[in-house]
Image (cartoon, rainbow, N blue to C red):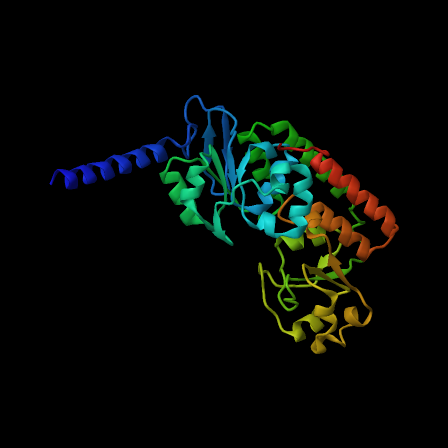
Length: 340
């Protein structure tokens, strides 16, 4: 009898110890409103204000593009958790591993099950004082906030959101000046790419990754942002984020060029239904590579536009463009190395 009761008591002690650990895992003050004494306050994509009493020092990032932008902010050393896609995406891994030896050695934890499925228990174990989460991962957000972990939700859905969320994260990690420096630089580069209002604009068709040639991005999407910034026009006339179309639609739009993301030229050239499309016949099909350099969910939508502008209006040599992109990458990342 005594042995049985002792066992039950022990389990209760363990349970309460775990609860105490969860409730104290976040040492920062966090609420959806501005709390008194919170000097670092930023509004996230939900319109909620996240407040910290000091810059976050242990950040779990569950949205891959924001991992990238924390390194742009020179705050990569604060990252303690990332999506496993960072290691799986060869393009991202190759670049970021040069910035952070922890990524090169795959030492930063990946508290995920795969894709966007997050392991909340593992996240709590990392003792974050801030979590950056994609706004659609509502279940993860609710669970983390119930455990008193500050969550800054992001969407990266357009240029305004990209800028606002970069500024918000920068505020929470104490890098406000760096954010303004980055945004000013990108805006200057966008101005340089502007074309005369009355100039003829090329029509661009964007095809989704992994050979999904008849899946595209409509008006108002991030791809549309980059196409417009390049001085071109989105061939897709639909006001939809990710429409699937038929070959007849592509013929009716008749794009001047086709741009591929994480696909192969053969994915287009071997499609019999597209062999008569002028852009295909004229070999005006291009692949954005390496993909890391052109992620439109980040400030690098500007580089996407720069590369696209060259394909549409080849006024400068490919070698000069390569030099310009390298210079831009140096500016965005400031040639900074982080991690030990």
